[in-house]
Image 1 (cartoon, helix red, strand yellow):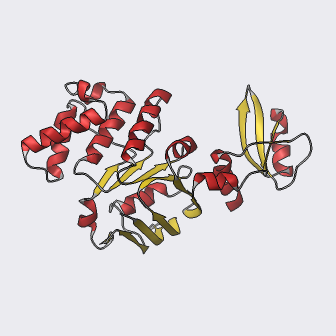
Image 2: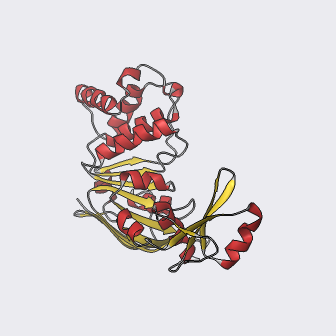
Image 3: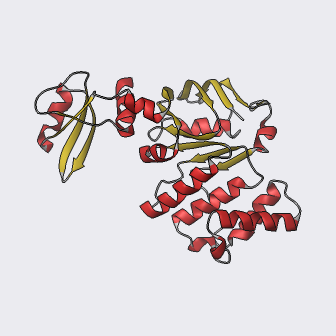
Length: 290
């Protein structure tokens, strides 16, 4: 299956343009949609998931015209929204039985077999008798993935799935998503660069509703080879350097700012050539948009 998004625009009634002529081609596997908060990622995901209508443009999934045949897309869709709310005093099987019935799986024995298999897959079978209110953030996200996989979807959308997870929970979630990505089209919407670098063979960067890059992360990184320069500077000099150079990022290392500068030639002034990474790709794309 293949997802084709063409010239998608969404302008709200208050005049705010959340998406501006976005076109993407997304095939089977993990696809990362990367952008800062408020970039338009969630708007795009809601349109693809048939929760929001665009102002203009088209979305095609295989032979399904998503905007004209939303019910057909919903039968093939799994969706984990950014805020996955559940009833607290309910067990995982109770929640999944409820969701499975909503997805049209009416045979109780069939549901039970499927739910047990899903709980095993997300490594929660041993916790099936506990209330979800007692679960950690990572466990709740894994329940969210389990409900999204009900009905064998061909398209899976996960929106900011690792926000707020500790490193251990994030790694477990990475492994789960990587396994799922071998079977279907998976769109991972996130502002966390590491998520895309760890999981995705293809990606897009979006900011202020505009598509800034689409392609393989490794190709984007290669495009910055020899153009990223770094230097540790005093905190008092940050503003001065930002005026003189194209500073794309500024982070603290041992309490001292380490700046990354985008430049085709050596900037001088004690800068050293840095090995470009996906974070540099992300910040340089946003900086060049202005």
